[in-house]
Image (cartoon, rainbow, N blue to C red; front, side):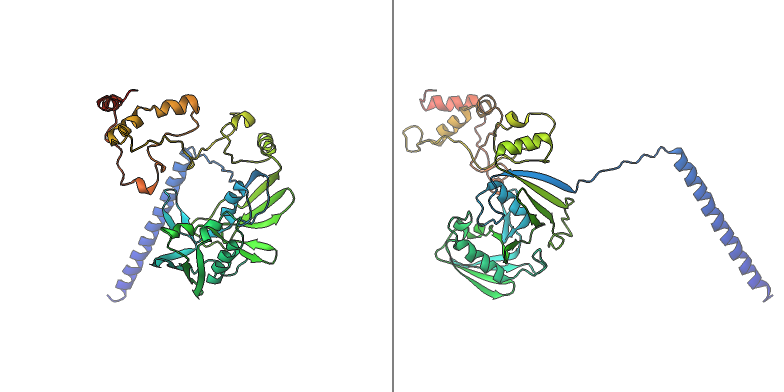
Length: 352
């Protein structure tokens, strides 16, 4: 009896293995038949890894010295500030991870620990102090106004600084958006997503910065950026039409006259410039807020934009752009009807 039990167990195991094998063979056959019955198509995507940009009137890559607006945009890819402004104009961390106002004229800023310059060296608090002092020595710098009232930058430790001001400045932290630059002999180095690989007479080459502190979460697909340098914007427009560059940036509202209207994509971004009508709030009639609301509503802004500005502008209700975070708690006037606006004007005996 004892010899029979092991034989039964072995027999059951053999049968189980055979059944499992038959199951997988059958499933594989069914899967193959299913795949043969499907019309499977594959799509190849050509990933763009290099782009060519064109600018005119190039002077220098150094963001503290350049007077070229387009170069400042490009510099934002190479150099980073302590704090940055988001699309809704709120203040966000960049090189700094914390900032606090100690008193009316004093701020403490802590840097992120994982930030490296594109040459592999660690970013330190001393680098921030050096950048502030460099800008303060150049009154022609576009960032001079940001730092002119800084009395002293004290290095507390490797990643912490204290900024002392000459006077109290409301919302001073919004001044901390100037780029931080490291000068290494004749080279200037940044912490941004791209680094300068070469500067030649007619072009500048940027390559992806593999040491960028955000590369794990925001790894860019573009590996190289070529910036072609031209003497005039006319040459930039011609290069774009000939296909020598991939895109250009311009504030010229009549750019279609130079590059045409076909064969390219266009993205339009609103800026902070606006036209407005200033009213005397002490006037006998205009002192009433209802009258001012009525005048605002009676003006056909959409018609002005379409007929006079040829749809090259946006209508606005406030001095701030519509996506500004400060407008989240602001409600538009309850007066929304043109006829109601006219009645308000009539009630205040104001002729149109």
